[in-house]
Figure 1 (tube, rainbow, N blue to C red):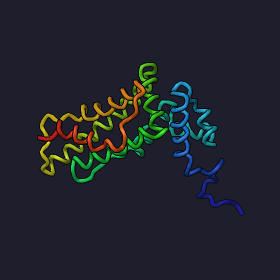
Figure 2: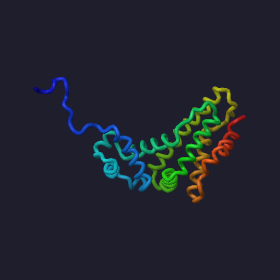
Figure 3: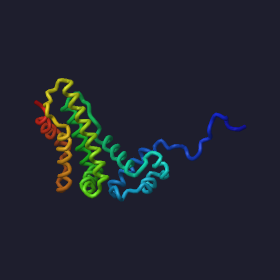
Figure 4: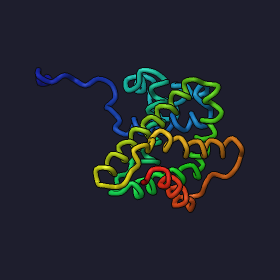
Length: 198
């Protein structure tokens, strides 16, 4: 008649397995539309159809939510590559990056980075975190290339490899010039290879 004494009755609504990706998606959307200051946890919760408690159970603060949501966006849109050659790795990452920055969401993110980084230290932190992860991935790609016997220069600098392309994209956003097209991928890869191969 009663419940099994070993089982605890569940309270509240059952967990929604789609809640987390949905929350991230709406957090990014609101960040791109309003900037960090204009994004609120209340608005993310309403857009995602969840309670605020659902968000705070997963992320302790708005900063953590925004950081996680942006990291997820970058990882999905520009995943790390391990193609078996440094040229192939660069080609895949550059192609994905150029595809992203030529999309509405990508253009909005680069423009947001340009406008928010000098005004809002928290957004600068997000962007530095993203670039730091890219530097780590680039360093790992260089190590793999050396291990395969590819002739990588000793002074090949993963920081500059990441920053030069990011710099091109930011300057284009600041000046209103069109972003490099996906068709420019091979040209940009060859520019990088000239600096890192012996």
